Image 1 (cartoon, one colour):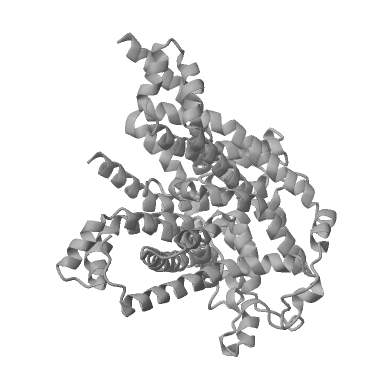
Image 2 (tube, rainbow over the protein chains, first blue to last red):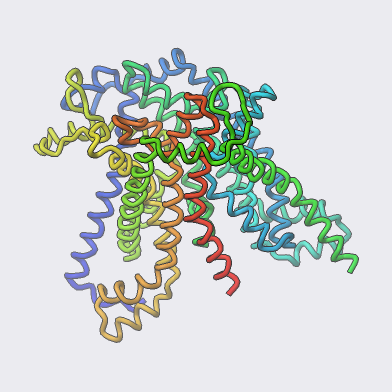
Length: 278
Length: 298
């Protein structure tokens, strides 16, 4: 880089840039940090004016959430549904994405029909799902919800996995085929491991999408089978809801996301942009 | 020739499970919803008698739906404008070889992986109008404390603000994502281009105005499409933050659809709302998809 001399003007500009960036970071972070802080506060402290920063933290809100609002069950429901649906959809989507990347069956039309589903308002699918599930006795079951997530996320997963497989060199596969491996063996023994990082992140994406999903869970589940987002939304519309408890609910809802999201931000951006950026 | 046919067979077999699921549960279901929207099924008992477009003509006469369309227009416009302005601004700042760039980037991007429910719950509290019993809370309390009490507002409970308060939460969640799109775009512009312009005597402002911004146009179009389709189908954020609001001042079509179908048991009417939403999103996205497919070909 041929940098100009570091004159006063550019230094001022640099400081100004930092100030703006830090301010915006605070706008992003403060609401979340304040929620975490409130989740450890008693109700008295939570409502105190002026607010206290230093206090003796309590886990009471969390305990109440698990005892009175059944958050253990909701957490379990969310986890099982997200995990199982991901586990089923990833192998199917991998095979589909691979074949689309390699042989382009159906040409542009099939690609269009897959990417086209990404824009779909999920609300268009909820009525038939509701009708089928109520005749098949799948309403208010984890199986039904798992299945609906699998179906709704599949095209998206096929699409991003197709992108990953396009990056795997064709020669590797041809070599293994010459060595006498069958198509399916070569896929699972040679291609799958190379594409593993991509498949991993597709899996994580799928998990997060299921974990955060609200509409299907709201309509298709009941008290026994509902997930964290539904429980959280229900919690705050109750009369006399306590802010400490609500904050604890927000923290619990975010826990798995925080744990994994920092690692996959790049894929998240790429995956959601219709291929607008590579 | 035999090998080629075998390859095609394998490709077909590999894609088949995905095709079956996508066709049944996406395309067939869209058709199904479309069919329900043209039936008489407007109470608990299914009644699939065909009535043509009657549900649609009725829908556009319902005042709530007219308010919803207006809210959607306001929400979409403000949301896109704010995200693009903030996103582009942050991206340009981060492109200046800023110290700690990756930390800033991670922070800005973080809200996008949260659920709209979490965002809604948090912002419902921040923009809470407060009450006689609690006094002021959230941002109103902050304004009180720093002597800016005149800025206090009823936020989403004020019918004049209504949906615009929800925009604030949505921008908080997705302006970082817009920033990431622009940053990727900026990184794709060869450094030589800027240098050449500077050698020709352009000031940094001129370089951005005449060299860089025109090159970012595809990113802006992409961002408008993506943010636009998110805002057209928004449901979770409204459900968690405000609900339909006073005089439907924070209502959106998706919430109306949910109310109509699952609380009002008017299935055919609800289906017609869903189809209108699908058409709105389609009008926005499909030309873009065709355009980018063509561009890739060229």
